[in-house]
Image (cartoon, rainbow, N blue to C red; front, side, top):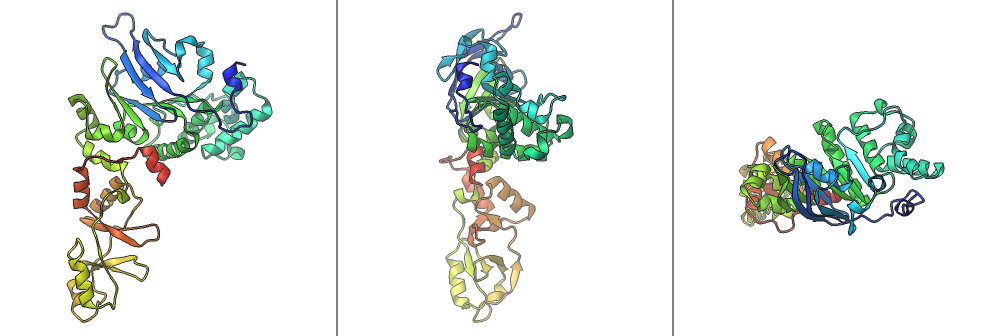
Length: 399
């Protein structure tokens, strides 16, 4: 058992620090090919962050990832893991310290779930007690019941469950670095989004350094702290945060790859609470009509929002509601959709469009009206430079 493996936690807990990863002019040329698969790739991934490699087919993104654990050897340049060259390590030894999760999952069908997760710990001569504790800990970490799962076989699980087990196996010896090659690519869209969110929440706990490969720019924007867009020939086109990438594409290639709707993609990186909402005229049944009209004049909408005693929205009032001395309950239209401050802006926009309305009341965690979201507010946001746009991981952490 080598020194690094003995440094892994002995009690089944996650204690190892994440590693920094640096590509230094990393190059891979295959004999007989006119251009490199990866060409002088240079970038640095800080410890505990997710770096997504994305680009069109044949751009070298999977090759670049496999250079890290020496499944493919470098032709030129270097890759440093915590400041040490991976070329100085024996490939088998190196791979035992790097978690690896792939689209096909790669579970051994003839082994139980517990034995699948225990594959690398057994190679490192962990005790049976330690392995069992680690297996149960990891199954709980990926939201699977150990008692119901550990003795089953991969064929008895759903695709989403097998993918969770694949992630658990990659984490078995608490690696400082994880490589993930389109890990959610074979999952249906609904379960894919669920697994993405679950993994981002998990990352808030484990804080591993992760290299994540995908062909899907939307997944890259959601999953990455930083995104490296590669183009044909394995050349780095841009390395930036999701917000920087969407707002300031470095070239026509990047702009085209991100898509013509890149402005709308920014909505996936912000919550409703992050933008300036319209002021609503909140009125109650029975209050003086004159005071209610004054509230309308001081608001950003030409109508009043009826609220209850807890300031929860009830509906938009008609002009007839103010015909007497006091406000009457005469609703022009329901207060739909009701948007929450913690909603993702993209989802809030979808709610407005589905309801065929230009605006909707926004409520806080107690259901009290905090303002009004409108198509105009969202349009104004899209024309502003990003100031504190968060990553998908940070948004999931806040939810």
